[in-house]
Length: 441
Image (cartoon, rainbow, N blue to C red; front, side, top):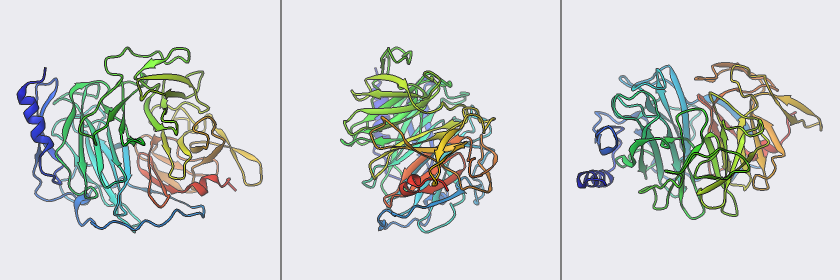
């Protein structure tokens, strides 16, 4: 049973005045969070400065195919005292009502270290380059593993993050934190431990969704390892409280003949609501018949059935995207290669404008217009030429007509003008549905 002190501390935190503070103090007993107290900054971080407060008159979606990028969004800070480590990874991105984009990610020397922190950068409306980074969310000495940022389309940004106990190495046991912004990410409510216990099923994955009823859906890895599935947390009150239908349930076997309770097959899963109200998910690991696993739930994540998808599995240093586009179809983005050290292993067939096909390698997109039953439209996501630094797991790669980025943690958002913004571990791509439907030359 929670103590009266714990209830009081969490209540006070949830009603604190919004601020642009990104640092906070934690009170806990090593097993669960009791209180989170924001700390003052001498100056606001760069992502909170000089932000246009006016709504942006988003233009209509372009019917002309276009592709731009990639350009880096992970940039070293320009302000003294801001942290920036060698390993920058696991990003999330959202569009803002003022026309900006906001991206967050973690920066660290080692993924299990207490120095791991969350940074942010803003791409201001009309700008061609992202701002230098600055720290976004950090409790001193704690591993802040896993982040997601999401605009609900009605002016509220939601930020969810994992946090390890003080001094702990790794991310096997995390608390789940939430906060919100209603001024384009300038000020934020004080963080609240919506999952106060340090435990599994709290490692936040980019890809927060909102269903037709306004329920927020947050995927979190169910385990700290490379296989073992993804949990879903649901909030039906705008982020104040969250529930996990798989909490306390036995771990599934992820076999087609055996439904599972409350857990998606594969870690780092992407999830989308289908038109009939059911959920569809794709994940990494827990492969079925040598393919990426697909999970479906008709009861809001209480139970799942599993099957092999038509896509190749992915591995370490790779994460997929699954989302619904404003135009209606489902978008899936992933990699053709399982091993990031072998970028030209595997490969998929892609259509050419002359009616032929070619074998492509690396980052690709697929479109489904029948709610995930088939994915006939596929496109290799490559600028066609150029040398790039993908950061983190990708490092340097050369783009060609049949070779794209071969690794990276993907995240995506679609702004109201129809532009699909896809980020990997360091790079930002832009394109639209018309370009995806256009075969390669």
